[in-house]
Image 1 (cartoon, rainbow, N blue to C red):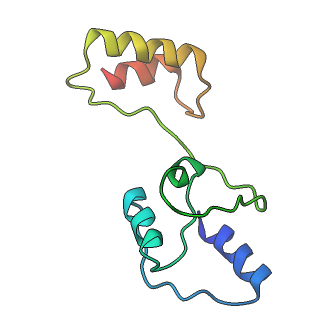
Image 2 (cartoon, helix red, strand yellow):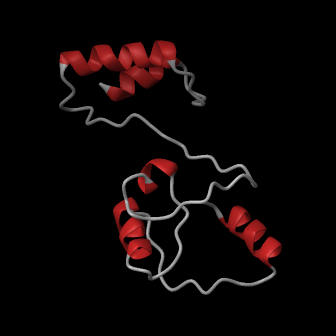
Length: 106
């Protein structure tokens, strides 16, 4: 969640939340909420089988950016084939041409 989205929730609730802790670590967020130390905005998949109660958020529309990540110095031939297939079948927002992205990742 970015600050604009947090601002939206504050405006709707007409109350300023007291931020006691912040973390980007998903497991830590789940654990803090499970221990009753606060409320966390989590992906649905993190709530399943966690013992937490979840309420879907519908406004504003929340988006999570997901990336493929790899170590370009130790990429196996099989992983390079997978990356080439991913590049063909998944849209990218990169401004660089595909040939440049491939060259940098090897």
